[in-house]
Image 1 (cartoon, rainbow, N blue to C red):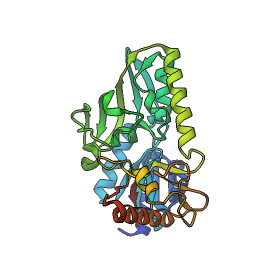
Image 2 (cartoon, rainbow, N blue to C red; image 1 turned 45 degrees about the vertical axis):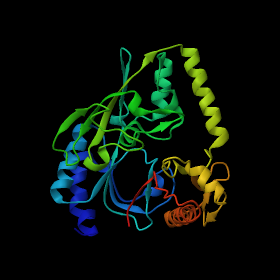
Image 3 (tube, rainbow, N blue to C red; image 1 turned 60 degrees about the horizontal axis):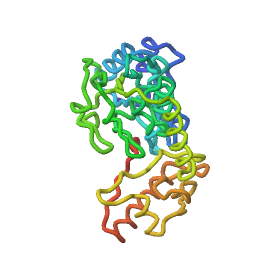
Image 4 (cartoon, one colour; image 1 turned 180 degrees about the vertical axis):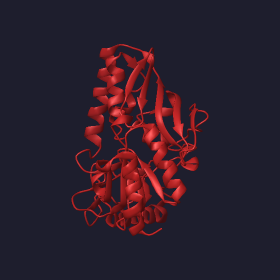
Amino acid sequence: MTTERIADGIRDELIAITGEEHVIKDAPMAEYTSFRAGGAADLMVSVQSPEQLQEVLRFLTGEGLPHMVLGNGSNILVRDGGYHGVIVRTGEGFNTMRLEEDALVCGSGVSLAMAAKAAANAGLTGLEFASGIPGSVGGGVFMNAGAYGGELKDILAEASLLSKDGSAFAKATAEELEMGYRHTRLHESGEIVLEAVFHLTPGDREEIWKTMADLTARRNEKQPVTYPSAGSFFKRPEGYFAGKLIQDAGLKGLSVGGAQVSQLHSGFIINTGGATATDILQLMQIVQARVMEQFGVALEPEVRIIGE
């Protein structure tokens, strides 16, 4: 399948499904990812409902086109060569929230920060840890996001899913999703999260807000929140902390082009301005090699790296 075919006939078919305003040719992925770096996707299509997503996935699968579903792009790095296929982005129709007794039901496009605030407003405790995680509910469930001792697996009652080829809808519990440290079965199955039901506990609204304010203050003090990044770049190696290994290897502040190991928290690689994806990946490789050389520990990226 050539880029020209993607640009012409495939684009027309996607426009017929979603509308012309929702299909972008040569979409600059730096504008749609939190790293603010990386190449372009041949096509990007924004879907506005689960049914539209299903139709798009069925079509792309039938055409044999490479494709990937993207939320708010907070844990993705697209290589500078770009993505030769179709990025399917979830739109406004996935930003729904509703309360069902002690459960908060969130569409996959809702930011974890907004979900935490909605829970606090309702006097429900359990989601405070997620208030500073820079991702969406869909991406959070996909990778079992966590912070400050909490993980989504602890509160996820059920997720609504769509198979990666668009053929079937399903539901799964946290146990059925095999949620572990920054991993779920979705990494292998390719299923897409449409909605998540978080089971929470009634609590004191004032205390909930106070906890969230404390976590926000800790995050702002210790993490480089003013620079583009993808959050913690590396998974936590068993028995270690990635940031401490990197700092102890003398790598704090190390730069390649516009990419830098943060001076504030060595577990973060940040874009100080104008970083390319290649800068970020070269810095990643230097960090991995140095930590392996000095401590014999393999650092694995938490960030999903795609493209050419």
